[in-house]
Amino acid sequence: MKKVLISLLAMAFLFVSAPVFADDIELAKKSTIESILKSKQLRVGFESGYLPFEMTSKDGGFMGFDIDLGKALAKSMGVKWVPVNVAWDGIIPALVTDKFDIIIGGMTITQSRNLQINFSNPYIVVGQAVLLNKKHEGTVKSYKDLNNPKYTIVSRLGTTGEQAAMKMISRAKYKSFESEAEAAIEVMSGNADALIYDLPFIEKVQAQQGVGKTIALSTPFTYEPLAMAIRKGDPDFMNYLNNFLFQYKGDGLWQRSYNKWFKSTDWFEKVGE
Image (tube, rainbow, N blue to C red; front, side, top):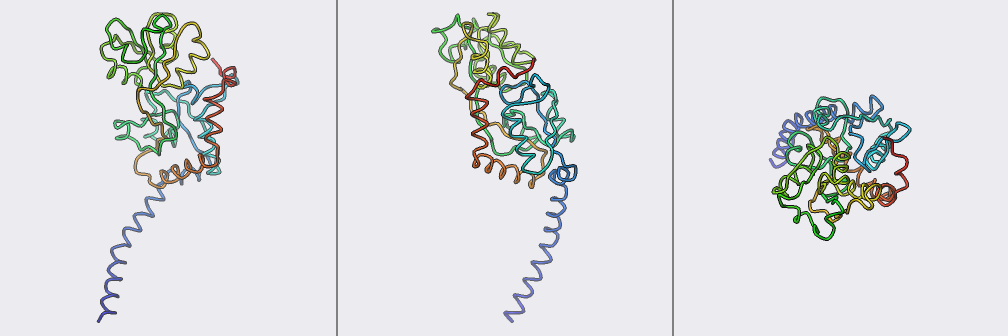
């Protein structure tokens, strides 16, 4: 009787599990991984100009921390890396409508974005910092000191820098710009008091153009994890990305790229206009 009961339970398990296994197989077949392997190319979306993550070089190619990451990902899959340079305000719709396979473009994980797309584990954590006009040296010591109507602060439209400025420095006058470079020029020329933007860009501007004009308040006042983004409903691709990141860091490739783009200025002269 006991053997009969066990046999019946086993059969019941098979009948219940079969549809589940079938569903899993069908889901795997629909993974972006399959289309990447079939086309033999990984299409990576980003907007060039976010230094030092993705930049256009003088020879017309692309370079930067994210570019290294994307190329390493393509190599790990045995496919060609294909860059897709797209305007930031349309980058999520472009991903959703399959204009490319993945976003590797300095995108911060936010709850609102996460409702539209899925994020891998973070590959780096940055935060908002302040590029301050030099005339305020010694007077403004942190972002909190800027929270006054007498100050004008700037950032790039539609970014976490803008969100931080409007939420955490809400009493100051605020102006937005189409690019972070334009906003930085406003501060360097004295038309604005401070730029609120990602720390890597603040430090780059200060080192390359800000000497004698600006001061970098380099302690981030927000926590912003950057991650790769993919379309929703693709657990196989997500699993691959997270395992790839683990290996990329473990092999020392992540650190090598970080040292190149964040601890050196040798690449400055290679950046195109």
